[in-house]
Image (cartoon, rainbow, N blue to C red; front, side, top):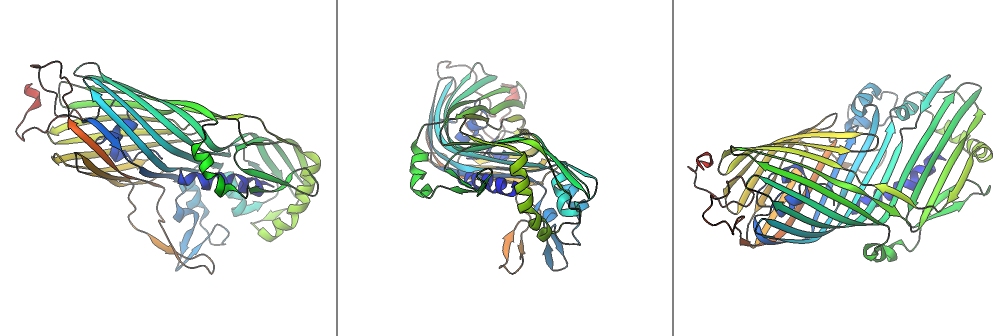
Length: 495
């Protein structure tokens, strides 16, 4: 039964990977990119008017890494079902919670303009977030099976998938020569979504009897059809509507399942070489009210014990039908069509930049991603170099606690009217060809726990003056995102 529930949610997890993910860390400090306003709405654009063209992005965070979940032994790759599999290595890589956080997608179109001390911007995006979390107790099943007198607690299992459209309306103001504040209001419109709410999910095993307790709800909005079993109780399987391909335009153009999100940010430029900034983005929620399917499971059950020393898939399959029959008799199972809400995944950025030279600065950045069952904490240090008005480079190194570490950065070519950029974090040091069973070899990134990539094209017009109504006042410092390049021997501390 639990395998079938997993397949039901797997559809939404996979489908969400096409829809824009969070920006790479290398896009926080560049001075010429309009996209910096999407990670901190207080960042002011360099040009008076800009248009952002379609920009795809993908972000992946996971524990454990692939080479811990599927390990290499001699010339072969082995799965957790192999007798020689190194489980301590897997537990060390996974931690207490096995977790996958994936975002991917498309920023479709945006534009903005700056007048005086004010910046206005509007953008349209299709976004997706997929999260799967499970306690390390789930790994014990493949390691030891169901030995006598064992207790398994799966209550920290969490599944969430949401794909939605977002309209971001951004306003920022430079209050004085030091402080800028910004906010983005974001009407949201859900396309498909699924979320689990598990209060209790446990199992105690022995030679004579298994005892389990479950109190869980799975809510979904999307083209899902339940196919009832012969017992007409717990569904035997789940399927996707046959006309899904025909309905994709409907999902992309409908404005149902409304919600609201917002971003806030601040930027402080000191008299000296330091600049500090902070932002909190993706605060919000959506209410799903269409194409609803909600499955709830509640009750306590007992089952004749089957002691399994080590994982035996065939033995488990032999007992699966009997177990489902038992669950049908004792569990309080219900299918309903109730609306449900899901929240976005907030992210907190805190950055500091130190101006070394007029065209060179060092950056220090922290990003915290808040998930229900796990927080992902990342740190980044970088150098941002702008040797020419049409060329900007950012090179850095990122580190995630209990995750990956590796180089990354961004390359920005062009300034006006055409600009191209590409950015990535945690660039993979190598790849490997992996063969499972008799299938053809496939390339994988064995050490990878994190990866992000984004690229795009912008149209930018007109140079701007951040204080046009204050002629005769001192010019803005070079570390301001829109400042005009200064001579190499310029010393801003003499202003």
